[in-house]
Amino acid sequence: MDNILKTVDDFAKKRIMIIGDIIADEYVYGLTSRVSREAPVLILKFDSHTTFLGGAGNAINNVRALGAKVLPIGVIGDDATGEQLLRILDDKGVPPDTIVQEAGRNTTTKTRILAGGLHTTKQQVIRIDKEGLPRFSDKTVENILENIQSNIDAVDGVIISDYGYGVLSDPVIDCINDYAKTSGKVIAIDSRHNLFKFLNVTTITPNEPEVEELLNISLAGNKHIPYAGEQLYNRIMCDSILITRGKKGMVVFDKGKPHVDIPIYGSDEVADVTGAGDTVISVFTLGLVTGLSPEAAARLSNIAGGIVVMKSGTAVVTPNELKQAIDTSDTV
Image (cartoon, rainbow, N blue to C red; front, top):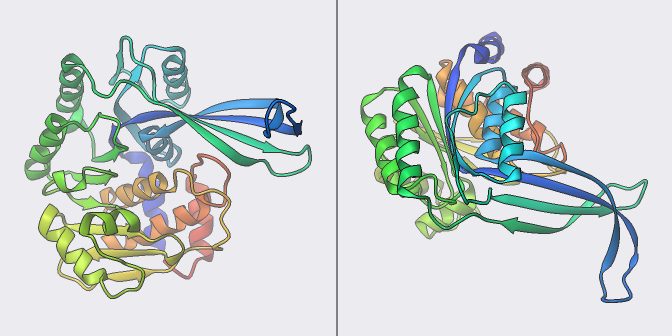
């Protein structure tokens, strides 16, 4: 217990490179007014509007909130939303110099419309996604690679946050795989579509549906859990695996040891799961970087995930919240 509490304090001594798809998470809140006479839809009276760092930006936000320094690698557009994200990063003490701002590109934006009464909780009624161009220019890819190669020696670990919007192109994945073989750094992968392209990395953190799709199996029970771990090890040649399973908790694999099932922390009555995977990989990676075993780091990230899903919207966990939860937890 004392070791894990000290680990949380040691997060502030670490610097993490986060490579991935930076997204603007936009929330528009409206008060339910009446049904339109033009169509069978609700009319919402505008209440407020906020924008948060989403996608890899949420991992950046989580690592920074935990006290560590962040070196972000990603791409945004030269539009007003991109400029807003740069200001948000700067306000959080995250230098945006290594983020490429591509001319003529729209920043990927997910707009969530939430509706409710004056004294009721607002619920999401629709999401509108505005995506950028389908691929980046050769110059942008060169800039991404240069920013990785110029800075990776100065960080303690690397998080890959791949949402499938193009930052993790084949040349960038090849670059990461080369460093995974030679650098000795903790390299953690969260990749929605490209997981099997990564090799020799430290750890991967897929969720259960992603594993089922990759391996064409069902993890509804525990029967295929050992098989899933074996197949992922054989394909990626990583050191550890953390599979998040929603209400069923997590399962962690540490090479050469039996897998460990970890029940969920807290209530299964969640408020919002948006971005919870970013919280999990942030805490898990920082735990590994500060010397925890994969099982201990997974138990710590399980607590963090349990805290963040009780918050609305794209949220983070602070060191104080983690330490308070550790004091009262029976899953560490």
